[in-house]
Image 1: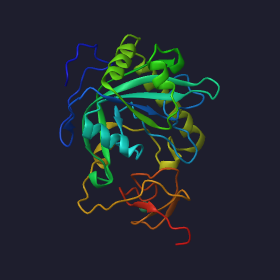
Image 2: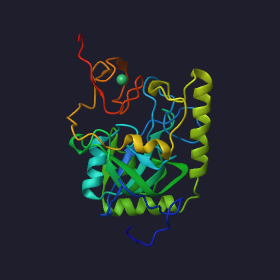
Image 3: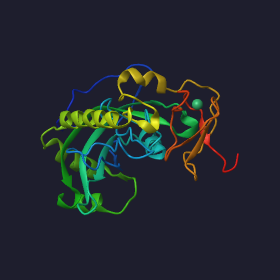
Image 4: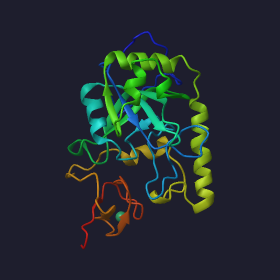
Length: 268
Ligand SMILES: [Zn+2]
């Protein structure tokens, strides 16, 4: 890992073994916008998003793109460009505007279930830090302009911006533990309501490192799979069922097989 003199984030930098490979840090980064839980005290991902339950940023494992198919092009660029610092931004409530909630310093990557052919890399943080959210418009310039600019899901940032934004986060108290409790609380709430923490995934409980092994790339025969479906319908080539989901799922919610879903034709 690069030693740039800034304070390490929340956890001690961790080392991951096979199949994770070390990512070298070229100093650049990304801004990544995510949907956050509307009623949560801390802006964790939108676990209860209807028919599209969110698993990323998966702070409980410190991963991104391991369990979901979100942002394949960003993950691909992070791996290929060594753009190792990902800052997370979200809009808490419509009238409040965008906030910065924290960052991952990505130290590790591996191929996801859909493989490099689909630009599917899973990322794992070496360190991460989540903070009391800062309104983008309250940041010092030029960070305020950069973080408030209109972009839909992600934006690459240069070395100077990455370094300034990281210092700013590192100077705030680490609230990662509060975010983690909030993920668990929302999952418990969702399970009480529907029997599942992630009903659109058919998942009763949350994510842990024990789940990771099932999401690594193992299939040598992978083909290209579109990442979106116009009608939000996906057919499983194992069980034949058609499921409805806003995003491509890595695992069929019915038969639980990996990398078996493809867009379902309108009248197939
Ligand atoms: Zn299936």
